[in-house]
Image (cartoon, rainbow over all chains, first blue to last red; front, side, top):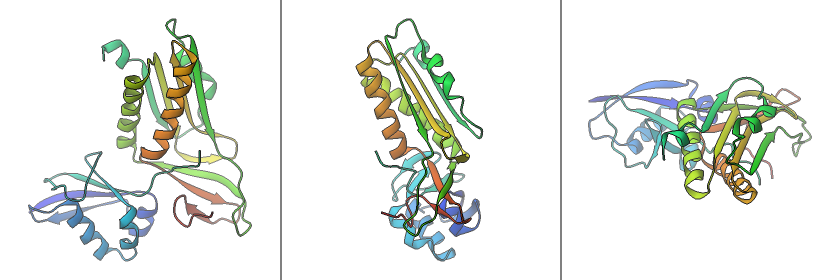
Length: 84
Length: 150
């Protein structure tokens, strides 16, 4: 097993109700697996996932990225944007 | 990139009002013939159901956003002959008319300064891990990008 730290920002922090948490996962678990677990734990999170990006240790990654023990996974909702 | 270039980018995320008058001074350089400055401010808005905007609350994933802004400055330097870059972003509550972001770029010629500055703000808005919440006069708030009015 490995332990990762998950960080939530903006609308996702409001949905989760916490800014961060620790997650125990199997050694082969990916970012997508972690997102699935979080969507089960927090009602309402799942509907945001199609537009959420993922960062591991402060760099953007894809959902198939395999997590390492001690990784910091951040769920990144759409950023501030703005019209030109 | 040599060491002098690495030292010529100034990146900050601050939870206090930005000193926007200072950013052009910070990029002044004998090698530059032009300085372009962009300042993003909170604009008054009325929601579709008649609420008035009073402020924007900015939040950042600070450790990541600082890295991203440094990376943006490096990428701009790869595209244009930038002399110095300053990017400062405010977080927390930003009332109407006040600045949330200021970018200054100096370059040997004005065209490059304008283009680099425009690219920096557009790319920052599209990529940086910074979010804004709209604060309305009736006490309600909405995360920008969600429940978005058209």
